[in-house]
Image (cartoon, rainbow, N blue to C red; front, side):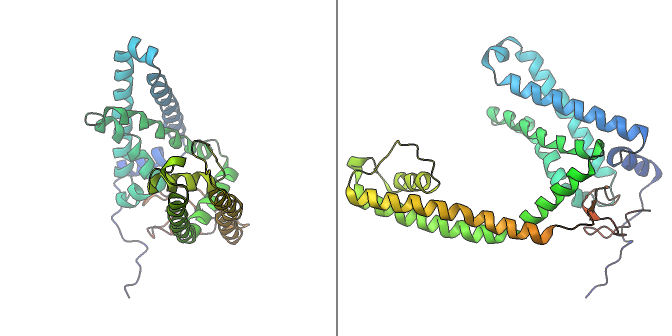
Length: 280
């Protein structure tokens, strides 16, 4: 087994080190200014996307909204490139939560040439505002967020197995209702019946389709009661992992200079993602 080298990776040049301090740090004056400008830009761009979905505003200010959209897309594209340049391990940052969000916040504008309506997915830039907790020194919120994300990461496989079982059940019950009720009651196909089963199982109950026969109503009542018990299962799975994940010592949310990821223990000396020294 290859021994892990905690110092592997080339050292950043002085200008990249300075860039890293400005972009990923919030202690220096330039770092704070960068974060504040970034947050203001995100808010303005999100407001522009929302206003662009209003038909009257879109017709009247189409050209202005178009320019605003491309201005912020180019700005955020440049910022994303600088974030990749200023870390020792760009690929690790690109695969991190914020790296993926940063990428998804710019790509819809470029894809809008092929799919015009996709530009409204720029609203995902709202997720970038999560950085405000680090900027405003609300470390407690970041600690709690990290605990929630870790618990979710540990429980997703169990939840996925559970969802697979639920999918099998809704297909079976949907097919059963298709046979019992038939087309006259609105169950015109198995997919339509599966849709009804999902709506009933989750206790949403739109009411657009309803069983008419006594047997169908008995099955519907059983599905409804079963729905209450099923809803509690993923909650219990996640809650159990949440208890296991909680650590009284808290989490250090300073970004790693190697990959830009956060969420390390306070007493950690090396990044748990890339192995780089956290405090050069």
